[in-house]
Image (tube, rainbow, N blue to C red; front, side, top):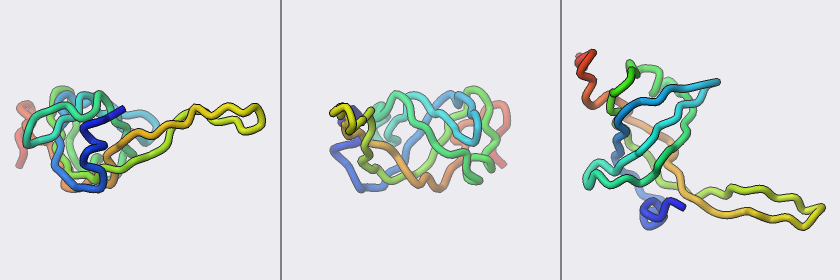
Length: 111
C-alpha cells in the first residue's frame, strides 16, 4: 500500500517522475513517482489516462514529467459474492493531474 499517500489523502501536491515509460491503449504508466519537495518515492508506479495534458508534453525516454494531482483512496482486489470471496483492499492514487510539463528534457529543451 502507498502509506506516504495515505497520510495526505485529499491534498493536492506537485510530483515528478523521471524516465517516462510509455503508454498503451490510451493509458500512461509512470514509475518511481516522487513528491517534488522531499524527492521521496510515493509510488513505485501509477497509471493515468493519456489525456490532452500528457499528449501536449513531448514525452521521450529520460524526461522528468512534473504535474500536480489530488491524492485519493480507491478500492482494489477480487470480489466474488457468489462464492464468498472478498479480497478487496484500499490503496491510494494520484488523480486529476494538471499543470503537466517536462521538467528536464535535455534532448528537447522546453520552449
